[in-house]
Image (cartoon, rainbow, N blue to C red):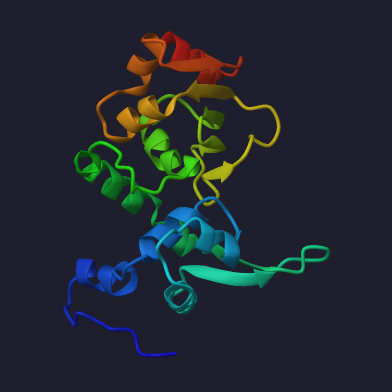
Length: 210
C-alpha cells in the first residue's frame, strides 16, 4: 500500500484530516453507517466515484482502522465492508458537518443525484431529544429505517424496520428536503400535517404530542 499523505502538523484536526480528508472517504462512512455493504452496493450509492478510487479509499480505510472486510457465510459467499468502532465514531462528525452544510443545499437541481437513505442522517438530527427506538420512514423515493439512539453502526438501514417500529413517518420529498435544509423542524412538520406519524411506541406518541 502507498504511504498515506500527511499534513505533517502536530494538530489533532490535521491528523484527523490525514485519515478522512480524502475525497469520498466520509461519504463511504455515511453509507457504511447503514451496516455491512457489498462493494457493488457502495458503488451504486456513490454516483460519480470511479471503481479505482472507491477500491483505493476502502483499502485506506482498512489500513487506518476505520473499516474491515469480511466474507459472508454461504449462501451469500460475498465480501462486505463494515465500520469498526473507530469508524462508527465518525457519526457525530458527519452529523456536525451535515448541520453546518444545511445552508449549502439550496433547491434540488435536476442534475443532483438522490437516494432515499441520504435523508437518514438529517432525520436522525431532527429526532434528537424525542426518544430512542426504531423509526420507519416512507418517502416517494423509497423506504428506510432509523435506529434512533444507536451507539454504533448500523444507525439506519434500507427498507422496512426489522420487527414492529416504534414509529412510522410518512412524508413527501419536499418536506424531507426542507428538514434537511433546516428550514423546518420535525415537530412543526408533524403539527402542519406534512409528516404523518403512526405507531403506538413512546417515540410516536412523543412526536404526536410535541
